[in-house]
Each structure stands twice: as structure tokens, then as C-alpha cells.
Length: 288
Image 1 (cartoon, helix red, strand yellow):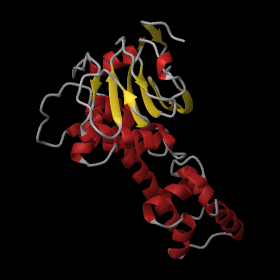
Image 2: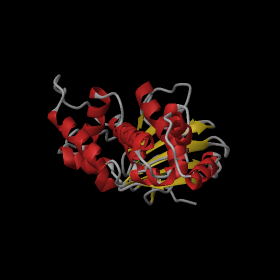
Image 3: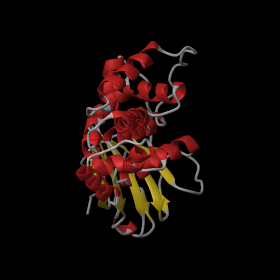
């Protein structure tokens, strides 16, 4: 049991971890509440964190009016609280950001210094998208980073009004994605290439392109896969690797989700001939 005023180490909560992802300077986890409310003591966390309660009644002293639906709370590093579920049947998503990383993230844009209950549809939507991504078997780190940054932005003070002209750095970022889509790419990589802050990058993509950087990266990979399927002579498993996917099964799921048919079906639709061995292998993978 945690004693009053004691601090949890980064990434630790009153709960059992069901799924956890480690990012460069943050953790995203889905947890089940396991501690009876009477055993939850006053405590703090060494890191900044968000909690989205998706099941059960969550009690919080964070500033903000109560509302129906998912409870979304932000706590800066070191804030003492006794937030808890009324029972032990709760589920929640937690995002932990290392204290130094949080200070760096908010050094220019400013950030909340008190615990906040975030109610806006934009904030709750960002948290729900992050939860869905964290529970997906096909999730990529760049998607988790994008959703986590979008959520972090909701706890920050309003940034200076942006220019009404599409920024030049966005073209630099798009070129970087186009040149390196077949390699592992993170939000930090894109922001570094474009010369902007990660939060500024995420907001700029949503404002000017209407899609997250991860969505643009995935779209570019699918375009390359489709082009290779139309004109190449290699098997689909090799095409998957050439286009930047983990394996053929990953490509199959992403391709079907985007276009409504499998890579093999697309290749046959285009009239592409393939060696018999590859055809058999592709059929087996498509059935997975």
C-alpha cells in the first residue's frame, strides 16, 4: 500500500497492466483497477500523466465540472491527489510522460500547473483515439506518438495564432516522409527534419492536411505497395518489406482496410501474373 504523500515511479498506477507501449519518453498503458477505494491513499506521480476512465465510476478532485461519459484527467508531475474508482471493476488508459520531457515539451507553449478535468470533445476524442490505437494489434509507434501529442496539446495554454499561409516546413516534412517512408520514422524524426516542435508539427498536419503524420506515412506506403503490385514481378511478401510494412500479414490488413480488398485480389484485378509458388504463398497469407 502507498503511504500518504508518497510518489509513484514513472508509469506506475493503482492497477494491473493489460497492455503497455513504451515510447521514446512516455508510456501508454491500458489497466484494470485492482485496488479497493478505501486502500487508495493520497499520492503523487514523478511524471505528468493523463487518465481516461472508460469503465466504472472514477472519482477525481481535478479542477473542472463533472459530466457524463468518459472521465479524462491530467495531472502535472508532483500533484498530490487521491483519484480512484468507486469499485474494482474499472478500466482506464494512462499516458505517462517523463517529467523532463514534459517540461521540454511545454517550455515554449506553456502548460497547466494544476490537475485538470478535460471535457472538450477534442480532448476526449484524442484520448479515445489513443486508447483504440494502443489496443490495436497493428499499431505503429508513430500513431501512438501522434495521438499522445494531440492529447498533450489539450493540457497546454493556447499557442500563438498561427499564420494563415501554409508553412514551408510542411513541404519539408512531406518530402522527408516521401523519401524515407520505407524506413522506421518517428514524430521526432519528422519534426527534426522540418525544424519545428513536435506539438507544432502535429497541429500543422491536422490544420493544413487534415491527417496525422502517421496517416500520411501509411498512405505513402500503401501507394508504393499498390504500384509494385501493378508493375512489379516480386511476391507480395517481398513487396510488403519494400513498402515499409512489418510483414505480409501487416500489409494485407492495412491494404484491405484502406481499399476494401487484399493485395492478392488487387494484383489479380490488375491482371498481374505471378509465379505459382508466390501465388500459393499469397493465398495462404490472405487467409490469415
